[in-house]
Image (cartoon, rainbow, N blue to C red; front, side, top):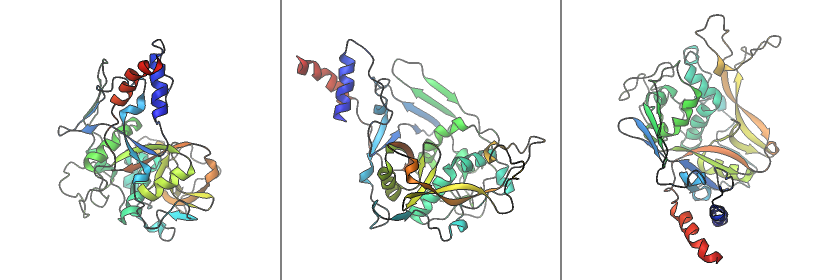
Length: 343
């Protein structure tokens, strides 16, 4: 880190030229969290005005937490183990998160999006693997807690303000996913047995169904990290399911393979081999005439060679153990001190 600051500081002193291009994630072995919070008026504020050099050094806008600070949630687990399963193979198909969406749930486009993107799997299996709680995540509960407005502030720039509509099953856009981690931090998520994934609830004080109105992962945020296969294993045993930059959801390893979660049509609902559907569930438009109802997908375990990803890759995990923002003062001090050192 000190070397990176030195390089950036020297660049800032180099006749006013722009700093060299920086990776958003500065170091390996670190969980990075975006700053921001939804207030009591249900408005999201991301205020970066005190980080004057944010444009040149973007990683300063993140909160950080060392991966090694997290304790493995299963005693005796290590990345040198021959295998690790966040959710065991035996009985995997009986887990509530694994079940295929019902016809009514498929009619909610937002739920299908979260299922196909892997976020649904990541939340459900992380909770089960870490806390032994078996629920299917209520996506509709999350949508009911979305902010009505999002404001991004940066020094000497016009505020970027986004007004969000009251979300429904039909008007959710993929771009709204950037706000999910702030919703999770504020409200956590509940099980679909409390708030069914068929309609957006209006009363969040009592279950719409017969389940328990218990909040999971409240105060959690999505953390980004970068590293090699050992880093991914470290994150798995300490924090839960990992979602890679390409959408792959990893829930363990077995020998030379990653243990992944994929969508697969339920038996008897496989695509027609002669005329298979062009898109998956997420693109289905059930309310539009002449658009066929696509397959009913369930989650199953699969494997992918660890060698698929070589070198440093980027991934995401949900966790609540983050530290304060790294102060920009360290870099500013370096810029002020360096001229004296260079004399």
